[in-house]
Every structure is written in C-alpha cells, then in structure tokens.
Length: 289
Ligand code: UTP
Image (cartoon, rainbow, N blue to C red; front, side, top):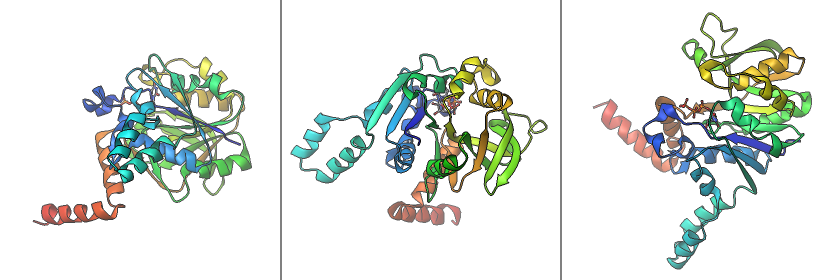
C-alpha cells in the first residue's frame, strides 16, 4: 500500500516572477484556495494521510497554511463568525501527518525527491508536484494506485501534449500493454521535436519504489543545470526496473506559468455557480460588444 506522499514545493517559481519574489507559486490562489490545497485534497482523497513537503527558504508559509492558528480561531469565535471558523478549521484539520524537509538550494526535482529518503524509508511512495493540478472524477493518484496494485513497479502519469509543447516535458517511449498502460523503455527530458520519441509527456504524478533513491544519488546535473528526476527514471529502466506510464483520466492544469495559471482559474470559475455567471456576463460584454 502507498502510505506516504512527497510534495516537492521548494522550487523558485521563476516563470511566475515577480509575484513569486514574495509569494510561493504553490500558494497563489485558484479562486479562494491556494494551488497546493487542490493537490493535498487529491492525496487525501486517494487514501494517503502522511504528507512530506520538501520546502526551501521562504516557503514556510506553505506549512503555515495547514497549521493550527489558535489566535485566528479565537478571534473568529469571539466575533461569532462561525462560517469562516468552519472554513479555517477544515483546512487546519486536513492533513493528519505533516512532515517537512528542507532542500537548502533548489537544484532540481531529482534532488528534491532525494531529500525525502529518510522519511519515506523502505516502502513505495507517491510524488505529486505542487503546481500541477488534475481535475478528475476519480483522483489521478487513486487511479494510479489502482494500477500499482496490479503491476507493482514504478508508475508515471502521462498525457498527450501538442507538438509545440514537447520540449517542455519529460517524454516517454514504450509499448502499450493494456488500455491506458504503457511499459516504458526510455524517457528523455525536454527533447527537441526531432529527438522526441512520442508526444506522451510525464506530468507531476508518480509512484516509486524506494530503489529510486539509489538512482537519484547516482545522477549528475543535466538539462538546465539541475538534477533531473527523469534521468534517475531512465537509469532505473536501463538497469532492469519496471516503469509503467499511465494515461490518466481527467484534465491537467500547469499553474506554474502565466497562461496555464489563468486557464486553471477560468476552469474552476466555470465550475462554480456564482462565478460562472460573472464569467458569462464578462464574455457577453467584452467579446460580443
Ligand atoms: P518546476 O521546475 O515547475 O518549478 O518544478 P520551479 O523550478 O519552481 O519553476 P520555474 O521553472 O523556476 O518557474 C516542479 C515542482 O518541483 C518543485 C517546484 O517547487 C514545483 O512544485 N521543485 C523544483 C523543488 O521542490 N525543488 C527544485 O529544486 C525544483
């Protein structure tokens, strides 16, 4: 069983500067909740109650968001703002076991995941990126756990991306073994269009066996001068470990860049009855006038 989820949130979020000078991108709000809360909800709805946050300096606010704020609770109680109190309590009671590990210098996702080694121990675990959201009927991670129970090994979630986006992702090559499941033979980080073996891109959801840590220790800095998680996955495959790619059901949103972030906000706004109306009004006034 998967009991632990690692959430790397230590990155600098440079694509969202200047706001990320002072606000971690994982705390930027999608409507009235920070991005990271959507990811945390997915983890909990997938049956996992131990969350390991990999943070860096300046990102402590992410932990604070889920921590108890007794002063705020007392204030809301005294003012009889019980609806608001309920909202705050819901967030603060959400994570049963919260552990944080500091990545002193964010030198890549590969290094961030390696920071979790001691806390994870010798058991399979999940990794979810704090800026990737998946809106799905059944949580994406839960779908993956289902296949993990069947196949074991390691699983990465993938989706088809347009050709012009291929060079932004880790791309896989493999062989289909059943509907939505591909046995991975190769992964390439941010290939050019010519080098890309497919248009199947790895998104921010993974299930790993603890042996990944051994490979993370062996990789060197590569694309972008960072320790790339995909390099460890490739090495693992080369040495005979099984990695499956799962074409998840649902819609993914990359909140780590301006366009992706705006798309995410619009998606969740049109799912909200009150906001949907405003969106419709806005479109009528501005597009058709
Ligand atoms: P990204 O590459 O999207 O995040 O990593 P980034 O480096 O913060 O963004 P840019 O490119 O500068 O805009 C995906 C996830 O991995 C975490 C990030 O916080 C993000 O949630 N990450 C990345 C780490 O925890 N440590 C790192 O060294 C790098």
